[in-house]
Image 1 (tube, rainbow, N blue to C red):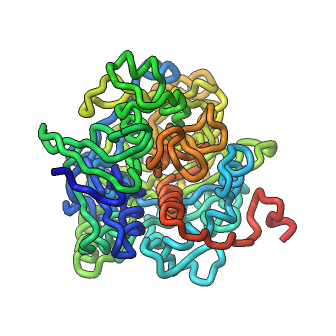
Image 2 (cartoon, rainbow, N blue to C red; image 1 turned 180 degrees about the vertical axis):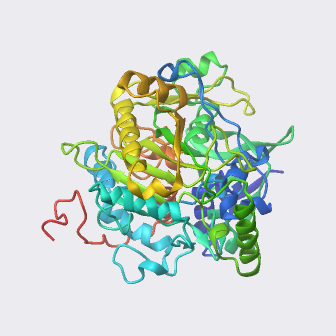
Length: 554
């Protein structure tokens, strides 16, 4: 006999954990949360500096990679996504960044996402947040489920990066989630008392004992069950055993930028010709499913040093220091091990004509190889250059109707060469920063791109050869008002199917300029109000960069 719930949520990642908490909070709604991965009870998922180890654990990852990218020399790249309760928030870098305030005004004003302007979504950011360092700020909240913290004790190299950058005349930024996120500075992270604050620990665990909430793990969703244009349940697999749950009210897809379009397509919602080619029964012709995928491409300047100040690496002094750091962490849950390593960033404009930052730099006080590794691999540091507002976009599609088959992920990096120019600009700026006197004591030498790579053609070849994602996919089930180009309306309802919504990064109308987890939490908070019929909170009337009432006129 099939189990029946009021709400069935597909995906136990960031959005799914928030929704499971909010929809079950009244004690009356029965809620099922279905997650393809295991529980998040492994130690490696709790220690903030274990982020590389967490990413490298195959049992917590979907093992995705892109299709061969023409803009990258016809090669693929690895695109990690969490397959565990908490989703990618259980394996990511824990960065708390919301996006530029004007990003959301663009959603509302340019993309037809009515109700999603910055002043309308700010209350939802604030609702989730427990951010003691910014207590009293109209841009921040305290008392929410998600703890946000300052870096506990940054590596000395982090301060060198900030000083070198501001010494070049780049503006300082004290709060990347305040009125104006342009500039360089230290960034906050979702860390509570020295432990990773995933959205599972923040939202799901406090709700796990509710009798009206059922969490199903190690369950691979095959498809949404659709009858007469209505979503009525979900079919999933535990091992090779098929099972079903039914939904009285709604099915909510929160399977992520790759998973949600893939589930829709397997359910018969997508382009008719593509579905028929795969032998999938068409339930609704919606050719925009999967179209519009965007991600942030990046390349790095990396230097080597024989000094042992860096966060990873082996030497007598660094080993002794690391033993002390470990003892401090084990005894008091504090110190560098309680941080997320990459603790400084910059959001900058590549030219004065650009209206808001289109380039992100991330400082790395560690030698970073092409793949995440658990063991130290030498002393070094570097800077990632990231195209924060990519113009290139691609799609997510299916290679097969088999739910175990990985989707085809094709973001088409550098199809628009403006993105390449942004990354190139960032690498040149990174070199200038690393050549400032603040880094002189470290006796470093550049190993990537290397001293021989100087002219633009050589830099571009290096960028295409080494570009990786910084793990921020979105926009594959876009939200908006145009039924021809979007998958969901501003209420996040899937067009043409009753009782079905998508709530995750796939609904971004455009990709925000920066890390995406906080925005996903906000979307889930707002979606919960919509689903429950709650009145939206009053917009927060504050000045911010890029608004009609901006900082200059406040």
